[in-house]
Amino acid sequence: MVVGLDVASHGSRSARRIAPVVPGRLPLLGHTMSLLDSPFRFLSSLRSHGEVVRIYLGTLPVYLVTSPELAWQVFATDADRFDKGMIFDRIRPLSGNGLLNSDGDFNRRQRRLIQPAFHRKRIANYVDIMARAASDLVESWRPGEVVAVDQRMENLALSIVGQTLFATELGRDAITEAQRSMPILSKYLAVRAFMPKLMERLPIPANRRYDEAAARFRRVVAGVIVAARAEGKDHDDLLSTLLLARDEDTGEGMSDQQVHDEVVTILTAGAETTAVALSWFFYELGCHPEVQRRFHAEIDHLLAGRVATFDDIPKLEYTQRIIREVLRKYPLLLLMRRARIDVDLGGVHIAPGTEVALSQYALHHDPHLYPEPARFDPDRWLPDRASMLPKGAFVPFGAGLHHCPGYAYAEAEIAIVAATVAARWQLVPVTGKPVHPRLTATMHPPRLSMIATPRHI
Picture 1 (cartoon, helix red, strand yellow):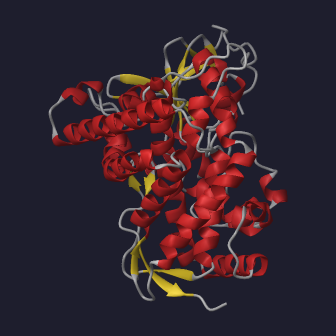
Picture 2: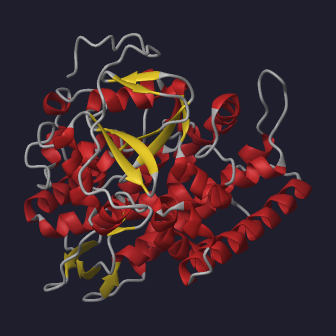
Picture 3: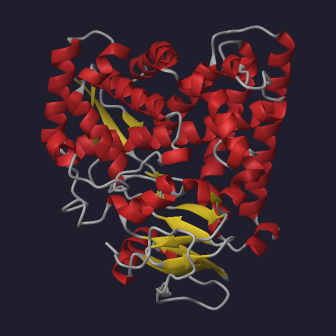
């Protein structure tokens, strides 16, 4: 903890600390190559240089905070002093001005309008869709089949979010296009986010593929929005909720463009993060027989062969601990904010317009917070142990003003899919094929092959 430097006066210019520049900066490129080549090692190393350090993305200075206390300040206590940062500027051509990218009063209005779509009662209805989709998937497997888990989970997550968004045939084209475009967008999004802005305009294959996929995806979704608005019916799906939402103060709803941007955000961000978490869930089970045994015992005892329901989710206590450990070990790599006004971070003065970043990966792998952070240990999340963590130590869905409104939806989907698979199958890693995270928009597990083995309860 940094003390005695007037941290309480957030806008004070009396801050006296100078954030050190991290070693390894290259001319013009800054630390971009270190971040892209060895992101996990690079980000984890930053805490050794201080609580606030400077890195350069190209020629752009970025102040990165490495402690949970300062992460919580940026995320929560001082959230209104920051706007979204450079990364969000780079992905705006894809997701527009949706909740992921927007700021200020507009963001708060959109959050109020969207929140009902993720109300507890709505999620209870979505769980039936999740269970049916997962059941259809596992019924297609055959004993001994080698399953491409990362691809199957990606398609499953897109199918689930598509069915919850679109209850009618109107959305079929959007789901099909999402399944076509999302692998391309995910593959190149991280490179696009961190590369110097000048390189965005270069006619290289990566830029061309990304731009074409983004434009095609947005065009298809726009057509679905126009058709649904013209139909004017409530189908009790997410799209209807967005189209019918009204601001309680003004009575105004969202424009087609606003609905479009939120739909794209839900389809991209929601499906990708859930698919990645599910893939790592099954991989970690396969690598840790005792964790798998305890998980299967809980599923067998509680469900006894029946389909999991919404009311079962809080009773799956060990399953919830596995989910939290997956979210700890495989979070987003980096989030950025931009100071709107003067801010004091740990005694370092942050001027308006300055880019500030924090690494969820580095926080979740800090050995001072999580002993042996590389070890997969769901019992870290036993109540007495989890209660010892400071605010800001575990932020898989953000915090404060910009906390993801769909976090309960995502956690419910992971639990329901995991329980549905476990009722019939055990997924066994293919020997001789180690799996390492690949830097995409998330910590994607490339080519995760596992063998489907029937379970006999």
